Amino acid sequence: MVVQQLLLFGFGATYLPDCLTICFQIYSKGYIRVKESLIRGKKKDSTKTGKERDVKLNSRSLAALQRQRKHTQIEGVSVFKDPRYDQPWTDERAFRRSYWTPSMNILGIRYRRPYNMRHTYATALLMADMNHSFCAKQLGHSVEMFQRTYTKWIDGPQNAVQMDKPEAALKQNLVAETKAA
Image (cartoon, rainbow, N blue to C red):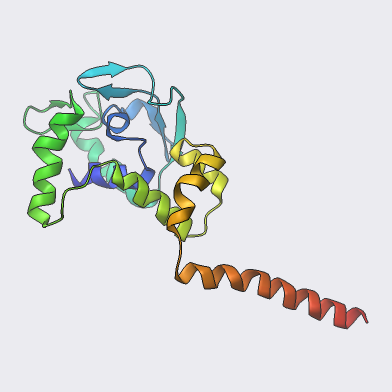
């Protein structure tokens, strides 16, 4: 199940139901196509937003998915299966009850929803100073929604880094003007 957590964290699944339906057929060239959901035991042919999106996987998520292949690809069904029954997950609540919550308890981490990994992923992208357009696309947001939702959380050491950028540009302009004069 660590594979599932790495994948959830590594691409900011809209929410858990979008992740539980991922099949190997829609995974290629380092991307996952998020196009359906599993909500309260019923498979939906669309995501929460009603839009498909291709999500670029980071190297850790891609490696985790490669390791998972040997366990579930032959069957041609969902990437992740409920280990209790060796069947695809049929309900996101079952995942939370039988796997997620016990994992949090064993690790001594206070409970948080799997959805919170999405916020962690978005914040990590911002802290890495990634292009907001790319980040928004990864999460299935408009750029405006991405910025409104996540940029308020970035503060601290990044502020100095950001302020250094215009300072460096000003110095370059000053040097260029001095040479031209």
